[in-house]
Length: 311
Image (cartoon, one colour):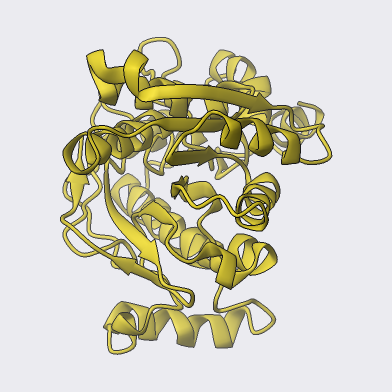
């Protein structure tokens, strides 16, 4: 809050962009809206960032967590209808959004399909005890709705215990470099996630023009950056969305017009998104990306399967 207030009141910024985290953005959301300063494309998928009636100056960017949870449930209903589901989630808006989406997607099967849900606190040292309890539930499907540190712990503990459920890991923690390598690539084989960005470790994009340009850009402007890190793709793609907003603003660089243009993106192609995905917003739709595609980890990379999914 202190740093945000400094940006707004001392530096008089036009807007903030890609501020990170659900609790941190929650702490500043009311202030930013009271001051009518765009809180633009926040780096968190909480559902609350798409509420133009109550917070018209705050907009998300990535697929929201409820939609992601809903699509995992949709897949399970179609391909594993008798699943016994265990859920690990973070005990805040971030984790609860995923759980709500999962329940919504399962519908009237929710009570029968979900055999146990266990939360963790961000201050917990590990989630080992939670994984032990989830295994004891007899579940054959595990959904990990966690931030990278705890996702890596959960993957490693599940494997080391000899438990082999069908395991889904949320997109936030799908980074090969930041999560799967620390957990152990061999221990991550078979994990399923939802992707919306082109993975720089995936050889299918080697001849992709947009990916080639990204590698050139990284070498020139961010040579110390890890080209295997999906978050570097994320930042670049989010920035391209902002560039389009500024182009649409033209010479009218007011806070009101920035927000107006952010809410007027029509079939925008950001080429680092997966093929077929487009960004759309409107004054009543503050969710720019609402599509994902499932992928399975093969020990080296995420392998896409199925069609592009939307709610």
